[in-house]
Amino acid sequence: MSEPQLKFVDADAVEFTEVVAQMHGDRRASVHIKFLEWTPDRMVAYTRYDPGLVLERHGHSSDHCVFVLEGELTVGDRVCGPHTLVVLEHGAAFGPLIAGPEGCVFLETYTGDVTPVPADKDGYARLLEERGIVRLPNLPFTRPPGAPGVELDGDRWS
Image (cartoon, rainbow, N blue to C red; front, side):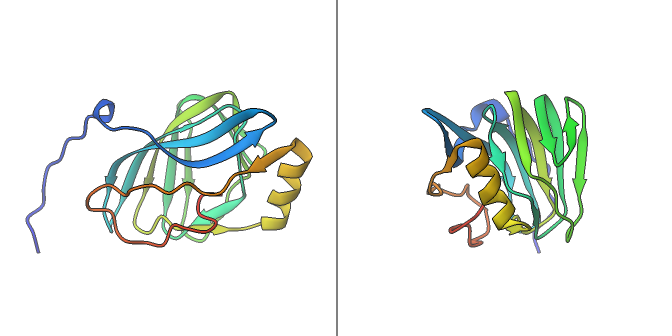
């Protein structure tokens, strides 16, 4: 076992990675993530949702925290503005997640496996159809060094 480390990450030095995209009429809305730390034990990300982005009701395969920094994120029926902490314990579900009119920026953490667990695929399909949103195929991306080889193809982060 290696010695515990002290690490520093300058978020300004990390590029955003587009991981989910949708078409809202002729406008593209996406999830953009700066992977600040990603190991088998944890993931820390600086995440931006474009205005109006809609993600399905889902859970994750580990505990997950979201701390809203800018804009608004509606989680189910709750509007979460800046300085709101959302704690999603392993086994719980939240959503749908809908970015506000200015989009939103948040810091998110996972305590292990980041794999999403869909909770209402049919409801999500209806919601997208009602809003005239077309979900685009998931985008390929390169994991940062140290990230586990978890399966993130298919319906990940839908």
